[in-house]
Amino acid sequence: MCHLVFRRLAIVDLSEAGHQPMVSHDEGSVLVFNGEVYNFRELRVELEREGRVFRSGTDTEVVLEGLQTWGRGFLGRLNGMFGLAWYDRRARTVLLARDHAGIKPLYWRRDPAGGGVAFSSQLNCLVTVPWGGGAEVDAEVLEVYLRWHHVPPALGLLRNTGQVAPGGWIEVGPGGAWREGRWWSLPDEAPESDLHGEEALEGLGAVLDRAVRRQRIADVPLGVYLSGGVDSPLVTAVARRQTDGGLRAFTIGNPGWGQDEGAMAAAYAARLDVTHRLTEIRGEDALAVLGEVREASYEPLGDFSIVPTLLVSRLARTEVTVVLSGDGGDELFFGYERPWSLLRHAGDWRWPGWVRRCLYGAGKIGLLGRRSGSLLAPSPGAYYSGVNSRLSEAWLRRLAPDLRGGLKGFDLYAEPATRGIRDLAHFSRRAEYYGQMQRCLKKVDMASMHNSLEVRVPLLDREVVELSLRLDPMECLRGGERKAPLRDLLAREVGEELISRRKMGFSVPLAGWLRGPWKGVVEDTLFGGKLMPSGMFDVRELRTLWNEHLEGRADHKWTLWTLLSLQWWAQRWLGAPSR
Image (cartoon, rainbow, N blue to C red):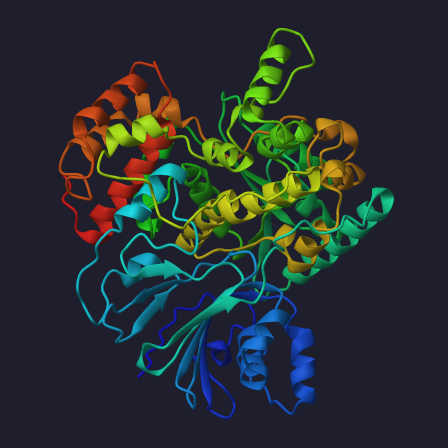
């Protein structure tokens, strides 16, 4: 027996013909499909040649008939973002699959007795399932969450749960038979860099133009997110060039804060001639958003930039149903400090740790040239693990002394066997793509879906991703600029003088807000009742950590937000006691 339920946000073909669950023309299979496939029109032409008949203009029906015609192999032909469940009535199998980048979520929960599987685009929907048994937190996955502030694919915070991996599939058959695999992934080994210079720039510009054109297809109003950086202004510039006018752009500003992007975004908007909507946020205003954070967070997420993301999503939804964002540019084109720190002295990784430490120390006193602090880590993998965790090993043991060593066999930052610059660069890209980026995408999905808004990401279009692998990483890091090809393309659109040289990120001044307007929320949530999981956290040590933050002796905002998010989620969905 298979039960499929779906709530639709209609984007293409708004008629009832697009409603789901959707049954195939021959009634042999059924599909529920969350997301968009951007090359559905070309695929539809091929299917019509195969004799398939269509009753709607949706991409959903194309996916359904494609799976009916070609089976699981059809996944490799899709360019889009999706989480889907396809039920083959004749074979009595359910296929779960997720897009190549993990843009759209897909969770599952198995009956430990082998009696069934439940699946959903939100983890909270799986807390209660037909076979019962309650929802118990997996302590090993909890440690992963505390270290890296989110639960990476393919793990699940609750026992017997997990996520379909980006580019992954799971097939469940009669009697609980279980098979899984990948239909797409970043290559394990570093690919050849065969695009350089002007050829690389022209190629990237062409695929980005096609990606934006594909992702602008909608039967509802469409706009763009606009920051003061590089990625979303570039997407905005390409989209504006493809339209006759009236493109709407949305920005959240933080007046008086060093990372406020409002003024830069306004300058981009003026240069590109787009209609700009800017809303400013302060700590007192953001306090009212915390209720939305609790409602939107279908699993705990230690990324406090969900606050401005919720606000900009709410702003955009007042005028449009779809927005384009610039997510993915930093991960694919080496936009963060992390890869630059790892790669700028890549040759030094051939030396033992004591030699690297000596080289670093010599650089500090003016000898042999300054070295990157990344060289102090035991290995590239340890470096990435460390910089992506704002919770030290010592504090983890103090806060949760019963946690012991994390998830065996799971290493989010497994490093290459060799350490040449190409291997290290590819390791860095994989680490960003399957690590940090998954947290960012989850945040955007939570905030946008809470506001019934669809966010599309042209820089994660499959064609863009696959071309990025052919670019020379050191050209992306030219002169220490980082993601140089994207900057060069943006300069062609707005002029070099307008582009900011400082990486800011989409964030809020959380450390100060926690000490000020949000202090009472922290006290009520972390010290007003029992914490979940029961008996896991040492409240006295937590009080010490909180006092350090309150007094300004340390900045524990990441840890505090990670714990707050966990408790809010438990109170909302697991029935954990609150004050």
